Image 1 (spheres, rainbow, N blue to C red):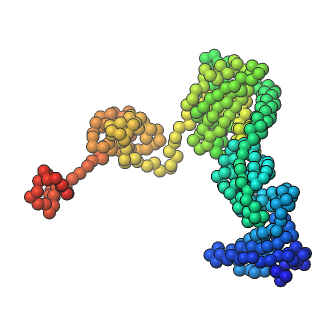
Image 2 (cartoon, rainbow, N blue to C red):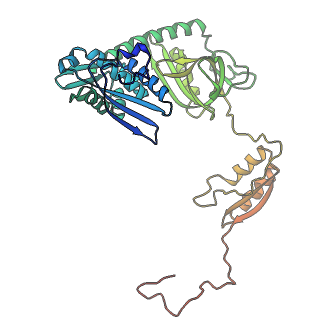
Length: 411
């Protein structure tokens, strides 16, 4: 009996009709491929256990694959296709592991020499196509059942419509819960009159109460962060009106360590207040609940309190300040874009004792640099990025008497 020395008694009956047809040995990969002829059907998980037992007994290979060429009729294949498909999915899970989960969202339609794999959305169809699943299944069937099947990847749009309806229903329920929670927790809107709504730090309170406490970095947030304070610059704003006439106001903010979407429920008066006081590029501080939004498929913050804040700006926190010795102003064509006044001001703000001006081949920034240095109390190091040539050395070496009127001139 083939492999009787490799298998336990539990498996001997399963392999008693096995006939060895071919063995392929891949020395570099330490992999064997054994092709068997048999009549008795063995499901893929059981065959995988047999492969493991044989591989362990041999002991010098990394992988062993057994392909059974079944002496089965086409009628058997059609009648027991559920078993065949389960084996195909199992094999794909082993050979192309990231595709197995996608197949659970697909249906099969078996016709005469045609197998349709029907996906529920175009993205899955594209992913399976990119992985060559149709070719894999076609070869798998041919190798084991000697049948030539055309494998087609299709998409059923009815699933898309049903999914969209389900999504819309869930979204409406989510919005309703969001509005209900917001109404229970929202404090009265603060006045927008001049002088009102100011916190002790001079920041304008737009919604809710003044925010005290230090903001956390956005890149540290997780779905379990709970109630948090974050500060960031607004780079996108969007509002959407619900059926009840209320607004869901959404902003995307960044602190340049990370970015996140923050949103709140508000009435039209509060919405006008946000529109009047906040624009793209402004800095805001929000306080709210950080959680995973399953519809946006990312973490978001549902905030109760919103304040217009001052820019965080960049700082130089080094204990020993550096001196910038290579700097281009607007006088360096195609290289510098900042005025010398702004550069000197920034260096002074960061506590730098001096700063060098090294424009490309020009000195025009020096007068303004001198004035800025006096204004901000910082030393100016006057320099230039120059282009030098050794004029004491001949430009042409090993020359000849030919002139530049020749048809071809080689230098």
